[in-house]
Amino acid sequence: MGCSGCRIRFNFGKALSKASLLLTMLLISTYFIYCLTALSDSIPRALFAQRALDYGILEDRRRVLDELRPSPRLLLAGAPASPPPGGAQDSGIPVSNTFGTKKFPQAIIIGVKKGGTRALLEFLRIHPDVRAVGAEPHFFDRFYEKGLDWYRELMPRTLEGQITMEKTPSYFVTKEAPGRVCAMNCQTKLIVVVRDPVTRALSDYTQTLSKNPGLPSFQSLALKNASSGLIDTAWNAVRIGLYAKHLENWLQHFPLSHFLFVSGERLVSDPAGEMGRVQDFLGLKRVISDKHFYFNQTKGFPCLKKPEGSSRPRCLGKSKGRPHPHIPPEVLQRLREFYRPFNHHFYQMSGRDFGWD
Ligand SMILES: Nc1ncnc2c1ncn2[C@@H]1O[C@H](COP(=O)(O)OS(=O)(=O)O)[C@@H](OP(=O)(O)O)[C@H]1O
Image (cartoon, rainbow, N blue to C red; front, top):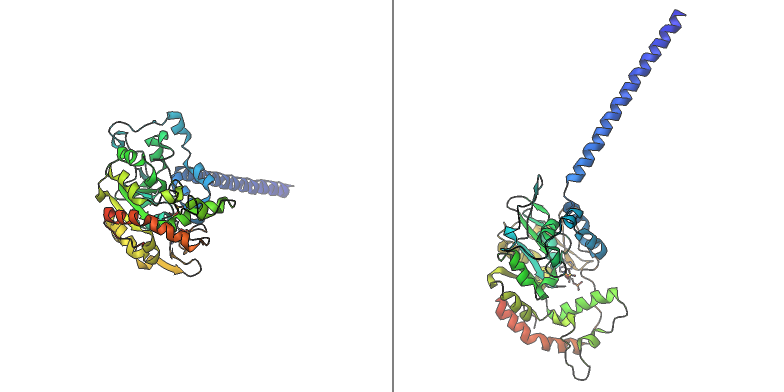
């Protein structure tokens, strides 16, 4: 009897110590879950967004637009419709936390569409002193009414000495963009990746065709009518290639020294060489070099050995570097003749012969 009482007491004691062990474990795991939730909340959204939007995934426009939707806080606060007087520098104290500060970009890749702008941005992002938005913000063309606070909120956080960048290729052909960029900061450095306007037009057409397979032929869109051979400059794919005309608009607001013209062709044939020029222009240490690239035979383009945020080699997505449809040579020849004087004017203005003819 006495002995069985001991056993009951002994079992009760064991159960009690088990329960307290369980309770302690429960408390510890709750604490861990709490810590993890707090940590993920405090990591800037832009950091996640940037990685996710890289490469192939970037083509998902819906996702891109979701990323660009302003935070509810900004919507409630009511973003200003136009830049504050005196430009962005007067627009308030920078938003700051332990991960750095969101700043307006000091350098923007403003164009040109289908020039190789994605390749340039992804190449630049391997530089430790460059932080860039993955998606195209389209602030100075589509979303200007959302205000500068909205724009800055899209930027990644940077530490002292790091450069904030974004790329939106349509800025180069947007009439209002130069004035608006200057209203933010007239010291902004502007990078334009240019490519033979004929190939660029074809690349542009290929992109539209991939989304709309019923599109009329390239030649029927490029020529006003087949017999006259007159080029239809109202067609966007043609208009964008008039680089001299668009540059004139930008030069109304920025001196030539603020521009760097990158050759889209050289970015493919000699990425490290072209990146050297870009790093110098941005005042960056030459970190990106030959050793960061390899030529992928299947893709037919240079790819990164180690892109930002990854240890595996990666090429750009499927929509970059895709084959173009066959176009009758006489149509391409006609376009070449059309662009020749504009190209020459552009070589003079930019101070670089891109050798397109
Ligand atoms: N490394 C590398 N990999 C793949 N593609 C490369 C690369 N470098 C430049 N390019 C050329 O970039 C062209 C697309 O230009 P963009 O990135 O400016 O296009 S977009 O305006 O952002 O849609 C794309 O045009 P297409 O060849 O017509 O697809 C490529 O020729």
